Length: 398
Image (cartoon, rainbow, N blue to C red; front, side, top):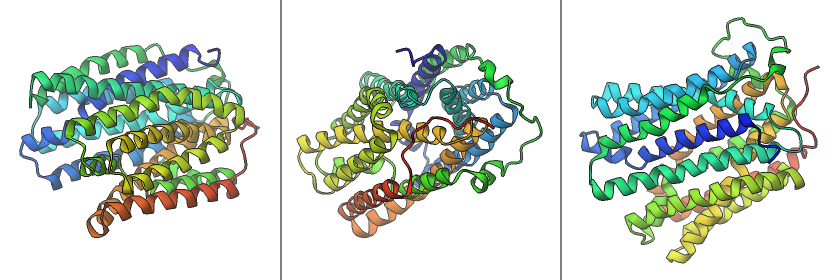
């Protein structure tokens, strides 16, 4: 527990509360918008614009955080914007206001992501980065269990009362804002000379050209993987097609998040002992097993086992990837490095879901899922050969 500092605890609790609020709304968002008369195409457009906003802004705000060598203000503003967007979506039904609220929510994510992960990196050492990022992901995933659980319980007694959930979700989101006020930047940041010049919007993308070669090699593999790592919605659709009821499908999603929440911290600690690279490659192999298995699975037992394995995959890759990137980046550019990766990953995720939808329509779910599984093994092989095993932590400034 010595590796889990007060700041890590604070960030983890903020993420738990914010994710509980967001995931409380995630399963009911399409149903709520459909109840307002929105078409599927309009819902897709709204989500696409919102996610693109988050993706394109992560590198920029990460660069800004590095330029001024401040973390806490970006984290606080980012979580505040995401929190206030919750009641906005319940108050306003017009498409332009829903778009505005969703964009505010995703902009908040773009503002905070790089700075928050840089703050986690600053709180870790070479021997504790996996544990620190893993603990944060565990708490974040616990929120993803609590949120949908609250939504299911509420809708059982108040069917179709979607709008009230947006105001209920503001409760934990408001607590997250208040807790974020406790965050303080480490004194070491003020000892590093950082320019306060204006940061151009292209700064995050420019980082790629000057990034360490090891960063480019690793992130290339991660982005290729992101191109066929489509939304979890497709796994849920496959489970539904295999015979699960709506309740069982939602239960499987919650079950996956439970496994993720329970496993992320111990897997992170294990990565500190045997290496981030080994754990990450094992996670990709687990992903391959899940997708190939989902392509042919029919029984409830097999599907549940695959969701367990999917939770282990997430635990072995999500926080681990960021810990790895932080470890091969200069301390002065940690937020830029992670923000650039997260932004490009978001763009790739949009492409991935679009490609998966096309393949699913043309060739069916079996081929779509099996192809993703096989390609994951290809990426695992690339990372095993093209990247070096991280042996030291964050690169120190010269």
